[in-house]
Amino acid sequence: QVQLVESGGGLVQAGGSLRLSCAASGSIFSINTMGWYRQGPGKQRELVASITSIGTTNYADAVKGRFTISRDNAKNTVALQMNSLKPEDTAVYYCNGLIKDRSRNLWGDYWGQGTQVTVSS
Image (cartoon, rainbow, N blue to C red; front, side):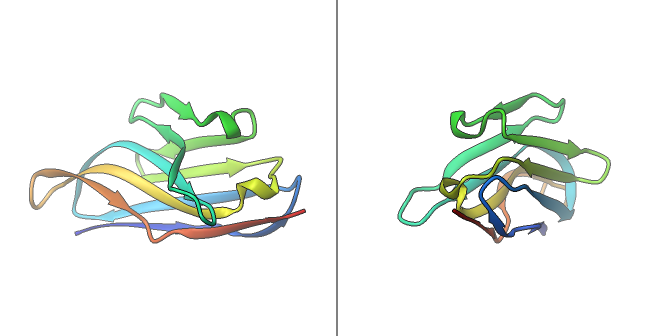
C-alpha cells in the first residue's frame, strides 16, 4: 500500500507565504513525477506544479514566479513553497505521485487527502 500525506496548509493574509509538504510512504519501488494540484470552490481540480525524478519542473501560468516546487528523492518527499499568495490561490491542495508499488510491481497514480489553503484579502 502506498500513501501520500500532506501538511502545511492554513490561513494566511494576501501577500504572505506558506509551505506545503508531502511524504510518500509504504510499498514504494520508484517514484516518477510528483506534483501539486488544487481545487478551488466551484472549480475543477487543476495542476499547480510538477517535478520529475530528475528535477524538471512545470508550473501553471497563474503561479509562475510565486511558487516553487522541490523534492527530496531520498526521503520520498515533495514540497511547494508559496509566496506572494493571493485570495484566488484559496483551494484544497492535493499532492500527487506516479509511483511504482513494490509489492504489486505496478505503476499507479496516487493522491493525498488534501490540505486547505485559505488566503484572506
